[in-house]
Image: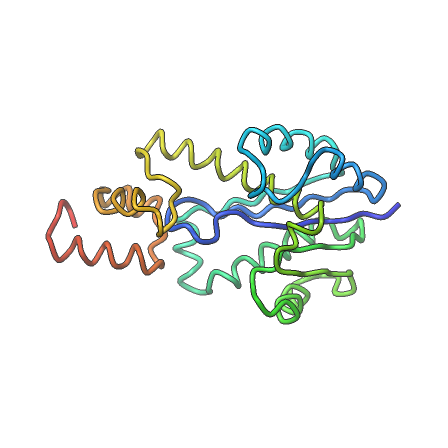
Length: 218
């Protein structure tokens, strides 16, 4: 019996909140059931449908891994490496975790040059002979990647909801969201350092503006 492993992430671009990378491994005989469940790219599903599928995917899968990297952890790790390298290493970590099952691996590539991206993934693997399929928008093509995208998205949404309850509502956390920008402009320094990705140009610009205006503790 063969296995398929799908990997996808949620939260690469936001200036606030964690990065989530999920891996779902499923037997080939059960892989067809993902489509029957209605599994597809998480962005094409309502929040309610994603949450409904979240538990069903976990039950149907052989196993799964969900890695969370907080903003604070990203700030520390990005002192040494760029975000893509950090993600690639974490994806490789997931693949290595399932090495014994010798899965065929499907990844939603985070770089436009998918061949180079694939080579980077392989360079970090223990078993460099595994079959790797790395494509842009793989979450729209391969149900096992769609399943991983749902686990990642639902997990991140849950984390963001808890952050809203603790720190106040900040919208989506993306730089293009006006509510996020307003929140960052008014956020106190301690909280800023806890939940904001300080390497982002958006956060750097707002911090500099705060310093210039002499607002609060900034």
